[in-house]
Image 1 (cartoon, rainbow, N blue to C red):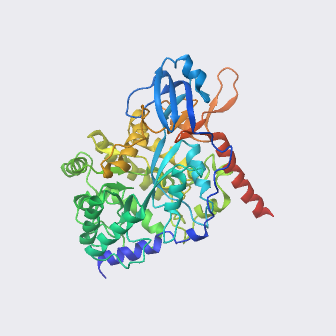
Image 2: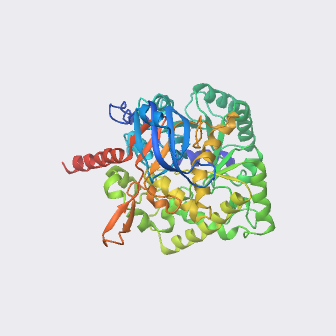
Image 3: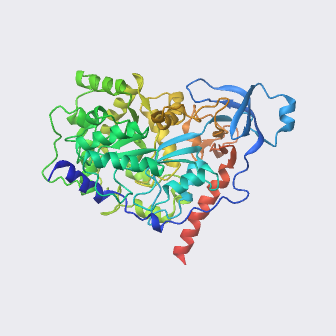
Length: 521
């Protein structure tokens, strides 16, 4: 069996099943769920973190007309603008940031999160106004494109949805097993309305190269999860040489940095046993060269010079270094629906629920793996490479929205400065999406003319990213001694529509409670 044929079989074994037909339809946005857009919306007294890396500045009044930022008024808007505003948001002392961009999104399936608005509302409640789905659903006849169109029209409560399709998925044109078929599929995906292609290295280098070349001609974005089953022929270096635009996760990096030609796996290794698969992922780190070595520096320089984007999704594997902590996060009891908690539990069948007998040795190996992965990402960033923020939610105790803020915290842990973390979450994420089309993004910064996608937070996220979690941050009041929850996003503005983040979270809590009650009854 050729290596890429085996890789394709491996992908099929672990790809999400085509259950989207069983998913519930996203309900239409009802009256009172988000307000606007307005002829004039004025956000007053804000401290602005504008997204490019510039330091905070304020107070500034932000005038929004329709769905665009019309003016910025340092010190305050003129009286006539205040008087003519249809809606005024008092953001005095609060921090306003560009809407966050999650570059690695999925929706659930009917077994774990049957109503897509569950994830959509959690994303919005955490300030995420744009999500790139890679892909939102697997299989044909799925609502990726219709959800994206309904969100663009603001007829559903959801972030801006950017649909990518997995290479070879969704069509009835046969196997994409030749360069000609690969190009045909890419053109088909473009004609359907997909913005880009998510690759697994589950095909030959020749086919992958043809697909990447065609995607570039069609001005489509490309991103890849370079699975272990394919890295013997296509590691990250090879994929980037073939024209890949983005590498997500860690796959392919350490295989590009091995001291010897191929990775070592023990004789009882089985990729289809996910505990074996993920347990031995961490054992790759010692097999790779050390940071600062000639091979390491050459690889980092190659990535930077190629213009590839890294979206590491650190958070999605973070349970590997402390499963107990991941299982007991603050938000699970109130906001994680029971069916999702069931999916997260150790399982022989659920993808990502691999810690069936997860030991302190496994967790130690993963902590050491993260140290090297963090260093690689930081070196790439420091030399001018673009790093973006993606959460890959719905697996491994990573619930929508909360997982995204966890990713921001882990980018900080990797060594990116707070302003660099916000840049990764805003303008750099937006540029990763729009750059393949040869366009500057219409969102990602707080600037006149940009789309009115904004996050309004009572506390300073540069001082403490935890204040972005929907559950807030626990702090003892020094005057009263009382333990208080502070922070949490207060309002999310998407396309000029003001969403009350507290109300969105209340809706999600209601979904979780209703499912618990149904189980009890």
